[in-house]
Length: 404
Figure: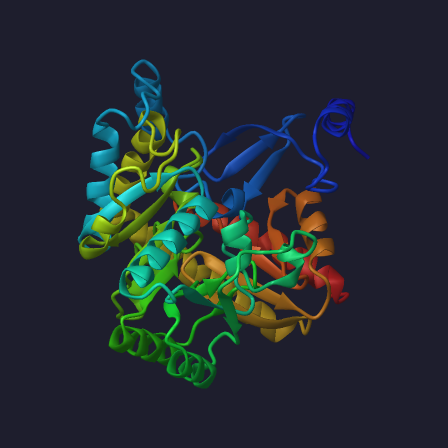
Protein backbone atom coordinates (compact mmCIF):
# COMPACT_ATOMS: atom_id res chain seq x y z
CA UNK A 1 0.00 0.00 0.00
CA UNK A 2 1.35 3.42 -1.01
CA UNK A 3 2.33 5.84 1.75
CA UNK A 4 0.51 9.16 2.06
CA UNK A 5 3.42 11.00 0.37
CA UNK A 6 3.55 8.56 -2.54
CA UNK A 7 -0.24 8.58 -2.85
CA UNK A 8 -0.22 12.37 -3.31
CA UNK A 9 2.54 12.10 -5.94
CA UNK A 10 0.62 9.38 -7.80
CA UNK A 11 -2.54 11.46 -7.75
CA UNK A 12 -0.73 14.47 -9.25
CA UNK A 13 0.81 12.22 -11.91
CA UNK A 14 -2.59 10.96 -13.02
CA UNK A 15 -4.08 14.44 -12.95
CA UNK A 16 -1.43 16.38 -14.85
CA UNK A 17 0.54 13.93 -17.02
CA UNK A 18 -0.10 11.72 -20.02
CA UNK A 19 -0.41 8.12 -18.84
CA UNK A 20 1.70 6.71 -21.67
CA UNK A 21 3.96 4.94 -19.15
CA UNK A 22 1.02 3.15 -17.57
CA UNK A 23 1.22 2.37 -13.88
CA UNK A 24 4.72 3.35 -12.81
CA UNK A 25 6.51 1.31 -10.18
CA UNK A 26 5.53 2.55 -6.69
CA UNK A 27 8.49 4.73 -5.77
CA UNK A 28 9.54 8.34 -6.28
CA UNK A 29 13.25 8.82 -5.72
CA UNK A 30 14.25 12.00 -3.94
CA UNK A 31 17.89 11.32 -3.04
CA UNK A 32 20.78 9.17 -4.15
CA UNK A 33 24.40 8.39 -3.45
CA UNK A 34 26.60 6.10 -5.52
CA UNK A 35 24.55 3.03 -6.42
CA UNK A 36 21.89 3.74 -3.81
CA UNK A 37 18.60 5.58 -4.18
CA UNK A 38 16.17 6.81 -1.52
CA UNK A 39 12.44 7.27 -2.03
CA UNK A 40 9.91 9.83 -0.82
CA UNK A 41 9.78 8.13 2.58
CA UNK A 42 13.55 7.76 2.96
CA UNK A 43 13.59 4.05 2.09
CA UNK A 44 16.88 2.76 0.68
CA UNK A 45 17.24 0.88 -2.64
CA UNK A 46 20.16 -0.72 -4.48
CA UNK A 47 20.18 0.50 -8.07
CA UNK A 48 20.70 -2.36 -10.55
CA UNK A 49 19.06 -0.38 -13.36
CA UNK A 50 20.84 3.00 -13.56
CA UNK A 51 17.81 4.64 -15.13
CA UNK A 52 17.97 2.35 -18.20
CA UNK A 53 21.78 2.30 -18.34
CA UNK A 54 22.00 6.09 -18.01
CA UNK A 55 23.56 6.85 -14.61
CA UNK A 56 27.08 5.81 -15.60
CA UNK A 57 28.75 7.24 -12.50
CA UNK A 58 25.87 6.54 -10.13
CA UNK A 59 24.09 9.23 -8.17
CA UNK A 60 25.55 12.45 -6.73
CA UNK A 61 29.10 11.58 -7.81
CA UNK A 62 31.11 14.32 -6.04
CA UNK A 63 33.29 15.27 -9.01
CA UNK A 64 30.36 15.20 -11.41
CA UNK A 65 28.26 17.39 -9.11
CA UNK A 66 31.13 19.87 -8.74
CA UNK A 67 31.62 20.08 -12.54
CA UNK A 68 27.93 20.67 -13.20
CA UNK A 69 27.65 23.23 -10.41
CA UNK A 70 30.56 25.12 -11.96
CA UNK A 71 28.85 25.07 -15.37
CA UNK A 72 25.60 26.35 -13.87
CA UNK A 73 27.48 29.54 -12.98
CA UNK A 74 28.51 29.91 -16.63
CA UNK A 75 26.38 29.79 -19.79
CA UNK A 76 24.15 26.73 -19.82
CA UNK A 77 23.03 27.41 -23.36
CA UNK A 78 24.07 29.80 -26.09
CA UNK A 79 22.89 27.89 -29.22
CA UNK A 80 24.81 26.45 -32.13
CA UNK A 81 25.17 29.86 -33.72
CA UNK A 82 28.32 30.19 -31.59
CA UNK A 83 31.43 28.16 -30.83
CA UNK A 84 31.22 25.88 -27.82
CA UNK A 85 34.33 24.77 -25.94
CA UNK A 86 32.54 21.96 -24.13
CA UNK A 87 31.22 20.53 -27.41
CA UNK A 88 34.66 20.42 -28.98
CA UNK A 89 36.20 18.87 -25.85
CA UNK A 90 33.55 16.13 -25.66
CA UNK A 91 33.79 15.44 -29.40
CA UNK A 92 37.56 15.09 -29.14
CA UNK A 93 37.18 12.51 -26.35
CA UNK A 94 34.62 10.47 -28.34
CA UNK A 95 37.08 10.32 -31.24
CA UNK A 96 39.92 9.27 -28.94
CA UNK A 97 37.81 6.51 -27.40
CA UNK A 98 36.42 5.26 -30.74
CA UNK A 99 37.86 6.31 -34.11
CA UNK A 100 38.96 9.60 -35.72
CA UNK A 101 35.93 11.35 -37.10
CA UNK A 102 33.39 14.10 -36.59
CA UNK A 103 30.69 14.29 -33.91
CA UNK A 104 27.23 15.83 -34.05
CA UNK A 105 25.58 16.39 -30.67
CA UNK A 106 21.82 16.03 -30.24
CA UNK A 107 19.45 15.51 -27.30
CA UNK A 108 18.66 11.79 -27.22
CA UNK A 109 19.31 8.38 -28.70
CA UNK A 110 16.46 8.52 -31.18
CA UNK A 111 17.74 11.88 -32.44
CA UNK A 112 21.21 10.41 -32.83
CA UNK A 113 19.73 7.61 -34.93
CA UNK A 114 17.67 10.10 -36.96
CA UNK A 115 20.87 11.96 -37.80
CA UNK A 116 22.61 8.70 -38.73
CA UNK A 117 19.75 7.63 -41.01
CA UNK A 118 19.76 11.01 -42.73
CA UNK A 119 23.53 10.91 -43.18
CA UNK A 120 23.31 7.38 -44.62
CA UNK A 121 20.66 8.42 -47.12
CA UNK A 122 22.63 11.52 -48.06
CA UNK A 123 25.63 9.27 -48.75
CA UNK A 124 23.57 6.78 -50.75
CA UNK A 125 21.89 9.45 -52.85
CA UNK A 126 25.23 11.10 -53.56
CA UNK A 127 25.91 7.88 -55.49
CA UNK A 128 22.43 7.26 -56.96
CA UNK A 129 18.99 8.83 -56.34
CA UNK A 130 17.57 5.32 -55.86
CA UNK A 131 20.06 4.32 -53.18
CA UNK A 132 18.09 4.98 -50.01
CA UNK A 133 17.06 1.63 -48.49
CA UNK A 134 18.24 0.75 -44.98
CA UNK A 135 18.40 -2.73 -43.45
CA UNK A 136 17.66 -3.33 -39.78
CA UNK A 137 17.04 -6.49 -37.78
CA UNK A 138 14.14 -8.18 -36.02
CA UNK A 139 14.07 -7.41 -32.30
CA UNK A 140 15.80 -4.06 -32.78
CA UNK A 141 14.94 -0.78 -31.11
CA UNK A 142 16.19 2.48 -32.58
CA UNK A 143 13.83 5.05 -31.09
CA UNK A 144 10.31 6.47 -31.24
CA UNK A 145 10.53 9.30 -33.75
CA UNK A 146 9.24 8.40 -37.21
CA UNK A 147 12.68 7.54 -38.52
CA UNK A 148 13.58 5.64 -35.36
CA UNK A 149 10.27 3.73 -35.39
CA UNK A 150 10.65 2.94 -39.06
CA UNK A 151 14.09 1.47 -38.41
CA UNK A 152 12.77 -0.53 -35.45
CA UNK A 153 11.73 -4.06 -36.39
CA UNK A 154 9.19 -4.47 -33.59
CA UNK A 155 5.52 -4.17 -34.51
CA UNK A 156 4.54 -3.13 -30.96
CA UNK A 157 6.62 0.06 -31.33
CA UNK A 158 5.20 0.97 -34.75
CA UNK A 159 1.57 -0.06 -34.27
CA UNK A 160 -0.97 2.74 -34.73
CA UNK A 161 1.39 5.32 -36.23
CA UNK A 162 1.39 4.42 -39.92
CA UNK A 163 2.22 5.15 -42.60
CA UNK A 164 5.86 4.96 -41.58
CA UNK A 165 8.92 6.23 -43.42
CA UNK A 166 9.42 4.00 -46.48
CA UNK A 167 12.67 2.31 -47.44
CA UNK A 168 13.35 0.03 -44.46
CA UNK A 169 13.85 -3.73 -44.72
CA UNK A 170 13.75 -6.00 -41.65
CA UNK A 171 15.81 -9.16 -41.56
CA UNK A 172 16.28 -11.91 -38.93
CA UNK A 173 18.97 -11.03 -36.39
CA UNK A 174 22.18 -13.05 -36.73
CA UNK A 175 21.03 -14.53 -40.06
CA UNK A 176 24.00 -14.03 -42.36
CA UNK A 177 22.37 -15.84 -45.28
CA UNK A 178 19.33 -13.53 -45.21
CA UNK A 179 21.56 -10.46 -45.06
CA UNK A 180 23.72 -11.75 -47.90
CA UNK A 181 20.67 -12.37 -50.10
CA UNK A 182 19.20 -8.93 -49.45
CA UNK A 183 22.47 -7.08 -49.99
CA UNK A 184 23.25 -9.16 -53.07
CA UNK A 185 19.91 -8.59 -54.81
CA UNK A 186 19.45 -4.87 -54.20
CA UNK A 187 21.36 -1.90 -55.54
CA UNK A 188 19.16 0.37 -53.45
CA UNK A 189 20.69 -0.42 -50.04
CA UNK A 190 22.66 2.50 -48.60
CA UNK A 191 23.15 1.34 -45.01
CA UNK A 192 22.72 -1.34 -42.38
CA UNK A 193 21.85 -0.31 -38.81
CA UNK A 194 22.19 -2.71 -35.90
CA UNK A 195 22.65 -2.99 -32.19
CA UNK A 196 25.28 -5.49 -31.11
CA UNK A 197 23.27 -6.28 -27.99
CA UNK A 198 19.54 -5.86 -28.46
CA UNK A 199 18.54 -4.36 -25.12
CA UNK A 200 14.79 -3.94 -25.66
CA UNK A 201 14.86 -7.18 -27.65
CA UNK A 202 15.85 -9.17 -24.57
CA UNK A 203 19.67 -8.81 -24.32
CA UNK A 204 20.21 -10.76 -27.55
CA UNK A 205 23.86 -10.66 -28.60
CA UNK A 206 25.11 -10.42 -32.18
CA UNK A 207 27.29 -13.34 -33.28
CA UNK A 208 30.89 -12.36 -33.93
CA UNK A 209 31.00 -14.10 -37.34
CA UNK A 210 27.72 -12.49 -38.38
CA UNK A 211 28.98 -9.00 -37.54
CA UNK A 212 32.40 -9.41 -39.17
CA UNK A 213 31.05 -10.93 -42.41
CA UNK A 214 28.15 -8.47 -42.60
CA UNK A 215 30.59 -5.59 -42.21
CA UNK A 216 32.86 -7.04 -44.91
CA UNK A 217 29.91 -7.42 -47.32
CA UNK A 218 28.88 -3.84 -46.71
CA UNK A 219 32.39 -2.54 -47.15
CA UNK A 220 32.71 -4.34 -50.50
CA UNK A 221 29.52 -2.74 -51.83
CA UNK A 222 29.94 0.75 -50.36
CA UNK A 223 27.10 0.26 -47.88
CA UNK A 224 27.45 2.15 -44.60
CA UNK A 225 27.53 0.28 -41.29
CA UNK A 226 25.73 2.09 -38.46
CA UNK A 227 26.23 0.65 -34.98
CA UNK A 228 23.60 1.80 -32.50
CA UNK A 229 25.59 2.19 -29.27
CA UNK A 230 22.88 4.15 -27.47
CA UNK A 231 22.60 1.56 -24.71
CA UNK A 232 25.85 -0.39 -25.17
CA UNK A 233 28.25 2.55 -25.41
CA UNK A 234 30.18 4.48 -22.75
CA UNK A 235 31.75 1.44 -21.08
CA UNK A 236 28.56 -0.52 -20.47
CA UNK A 237 29.93 -3.75 -22.04
CA UNK A 238 33.42 -3.50 -20.54
CA UNK A 239 34.91 -1.66 -23.54
CA UNK A 240 34.26 1.97 -24.41
CA UNK A 241 31.95 0.77 -27.20
CA UNK A 242 30.46 -2.64 -27.94
CA UNK A 243 31.77 -2.72 -31.52
CA UNK A 244 35.30 -2.90 -30.10
CA UNK A 245 34.59 -6.49 -28.99
CA UNK A 246 34.06 -7.43 -32.65
CA UNK A 247 37.17 -6.09 -34.35
CA UNK A 248 35.22 -4.02 -36.89
CA UNK A 249 35.37 -0.44 -38.10
CA UNK A 250 31.89 1.13 -38.28
CA UNK A 251 31.13 4.10 -40.48
CA UNK A 252 28.79 5.65 -37.90
CA UNK A 253 28.07 5.08 -34.22
CA UNK A 254 25.18 6.59 -32.28
CA UNK A 255 25.35 7.40 -28.57
CA UNK A 256 23.12 8.65 -25.74
CA UNK A 257 22.00 7.21 -22.38
CA UNK A 258 25.24 6.87 -20.37
CA UNK A 259 27.01 9.64 -22.32
CA UNK A 260 25.76 12.42 -20.03
CA UNK A 261 25.64 10.46 -16.79
CA UNK A 262 21.98 11.44 -16.40
CA UNK A 263 21.99 14.77 -18.23
CA UNK A 264 20.10 14.37 -21.54
CA UNK A 265 22.48 14.24 -24.52
CA UNK A 266 22.96 12.16 -27.64
CA UNK A 267 25.59 12.08 -30.35
CA UNK A 268 26.32 10.74 -33.81
CA UNK A 269 29.99 10.06 -34.54
CA UNK A 270 31.01 9.32 -38.13
CA UNK A 271 34.09 8.73 -40.22
CA UNK A 272 35.71 11.95 -41.44
CA UNK A 273 34.93 11.36 -45.11
CA UNK A 274 31.18 11.48 -44.40
CA UNK A 275 31.21 14.91 -42.75
CA UNK A 276 30.94 16.98 -45.98
CA UNK A 277 27.47 15.45 -46.51
CA UNK A 278 26.22 17.47 -43.55
CA UNK A 279 27.15 20.91 -44.76
CA UNK A 280 25.73 24.20 -43.65
CA UNK A 281 22.01 24.09 -42.85
CA UNK A 282 21.52 20.40 -43.71
CA UNK A 283 20.81 19.28 -40.14
CA UNK A 284 20.57 20.93 -36.74
CA UNK A 285 18.96 21.16 -33.32
CA UNK A 286 18.39 24.02 -30.91
CA UNK A 287 19.43 22.35 -27.68
CA UNK A 288 21.84 19.75 -29.06
CA UNK A 289 25.24 19.84 -27.38
CA UNK A 290 24.60 22.83 -25.16
CA UNK A 291 27.24 23.84 -22.62
CA UNK A 292 25.74 21.98 -19.66
CA UNK A 293 25.08 18.71 -21.51
CA UNK A 294 28.55 18.65 -23.04
CA UNK A 295 30.19 19.52 -19.72
CA UNK A 296 28.48 16.42 -18.32
CA UNK A 297 29.60 14.29 -21.28
CA UNK A 298 33.16 15.59 -21.05
CA UNK A 299 33.38 14.60 -17.39
CA UNK A 300 31.95 11.10 -18.03
CA UNK A 301 34.24 10.51 -21.02
CA UNK A 302 37.32 11.57 -19.06
CA UNK A 303 36.39 9.01 -16.39
CA UNK A 304 35.96 6.36 -19.08
CA UNK A 305 39.48 7.01 -20.38
CA UNK A 306 40.98 6.14 -17.00
CA UNK A 307 41.60 2.44 -16.18
CA UNK A 308 39.65 2.43 -12.89
CA UNK A 309 36.18 2.44 -14.48
CA UNK A 310 36.70 -0.43 -17.00
CA UNK A 311 38.53 -2.39 -14.29
CA UNK A 312 35.55 -2.07 -11.94
CA UNK A 313 33.13 -3.09 -14.69
CA UNK A 314 35.19 -6.23 -15.38
CA UNK A 315 35.42 -7.23 -11.71
CA UNK A 316 31.75 -6.67 -10.87
CA UNK A 317 30.67 -8.30 -14.14
CA UNK A 318 32.69 -11.44 -13.37
CA UNK A 319 31.13 -11.60 -9.92
CA UNK A 320 27.53 -11.15 -11.14
CA UNK A 321 27.89 -13.66 -13.97
CA UNK A 322 29.44 -16.12 -11.53
CA UNK A 323 26.58 -15.74 -9.06
CA UNK A 324 23.98 -16.03 -11.82
CA UNK A 325 25.59 -19.18 -13.18
CA UNK A 326 25.48 -20.76 -9.72
CA UNK A 327 21.86 -19.67 -9.32
CA UNK A 328 20.92 -21.16 -12.68
CA UNK A 329 22.14 -24.55 -11.48
CA UNK A 330 19.89 -24.25 -8.40
CA UNK A 331 16.76 -22.59 -9.73
CA UNK A 332 15.18 -24.08 -12.90
CA UNK A 333 13.19 -20.92 -13.63
CA UNK A 334 16.45 -19.37 -14.97
CA UNK A 335 16.63 -20.42 -18.62
CA UNK A 336 19.60 -18.44 -19.89
CA UNK A 337 22.07 -15.74 -18.87
CA UNK A 338 23.22 -13.32 -21.57
CA UNK A 339 25.22 -10.12 -21.77
CA UNK A 340 28.55 -8.36 -21.65
CA UNK A 341 30.07 -6.26 -18.90
CA UNK A 342 27.28 -4.72 -16.85
CA UNK A 343 24.66 -5.17 -19.57
CA UNK A 344 23.12 -8.43 -18.37
CA UNK A 345 19.91 -10.27 -19.09
CA UNK A 346 18.45 -13.23 -17.19
CA UNK A 347 15.81 -15.06 -19.19
CA UNK A 348 13.19 -16.70 -17.00
CA UNK A 349 10.57 -19.38 -17.58
CA UNK A 350 7.99 -17.05 -16.00
CA UNK A 351 6.96 -13.42 -16.67
CA UNK A 352 9.57 -11.10 -15.21
CA UNK A 353 7.51 -8.15 -13.97
CA UNK A 354 6.44 -10.01 -10.84
CA UNK A 355 10.13 -10.47 -10.00
CA UNK A 356 10.72 -6.76 -10.63
CA UNK A 357 7.95 -5.67 -8.25
CA UNK A 358 9.04 -8.11 -5.55
CA UNK A 359 12.63 -6.89 -5.89
CA UNK A 360 11.50 -3.28 -5.51
CA UNK A 361 9.59 -4.18 -2.36
CA UNK A 362 12.80 -5.80 -1.05
CA UNK A 363 14.93 -2.73 -1.88
CA UNK A 364 16.43 -3.73 -5.25
CA UNK A 365 15.78 -1.91 -8.54
CA UNK A 366 15.83 -4.16 -11.63
CA UNK A 367 13.92 -4.14 -14.89
CA UNK A 368 12.18 -6.55 -17.25
CA UNK A 369 12.23 -6.50 -21.05
CA UNK A 370 10.81 -8.85 -23.68
CA UNK A 371 8.36 -10.09 -21.01
CA UNK A 372 10.66 -12.69 -19.44
CA UNK A 373 14.14 -11.15 -19.39
CA UNK A 374 15.25 -9.47 -16.17
CA UNK A 375 17.88 -6.81 -16.88
CA UNK A 376 20.78 -6.02 -14.56
CA UNK A 377 22.48 -2.72 -15.50
CA UNK A 378 23.90 -1.00 -12.41
CA UNK A 379 26.03 2.15 -12.48
CA UNK A 380 29.53 1.35 -13.74
CA UNK A 381 30.92 2.62 -10.44
CA UNK A 382 28.99 0.16 -8.27
CA UNK A 383 31.09 -1.29 -5.44
CA UNK A 384 31.57 -5.00 -4.99
CA UNK A 385 29.95 -4.74 -1.57
CA UNK A 386 26.78 -3.21 -3.00
CA UNK A 387 26.74 -5.68 -5.89
CA UNK A 388 26.91 -8.58 -3.43
CA UNK A 389 24.06 -7.14 -1.41
CA UNK A 390 21.94 -6.71 -4.51
CA UNK A 391 22.59 -10.24 -5.75
CA UNK A 392 21.67 -11.63 -2.36
CA UNK A 393 18.27 -9.91 -2.59
CA UNK A 394 17.74 -11.21 -6.11
CA UNK A 395 18.60 -14.77 -5.13
CA UNK A 396 16.22 -14.65 -2.16
CA UNK A 397 13.39 -13.64 -4.48
CA UNK A 398 14.18 -16.30 -7.10
CA UNK A 399 14.51 -18.95 -4.38
CA UNK A 400 11.06 -18.04 -3.05
CA UNK A 401 9.60 -18.46 -6.54
CA UNK A 402 10.66 -22.13 -6.62
CA UNK A 403 9.87 -22.75 -2.98
CA UNK A 404 13.46 -23.10 -1.74
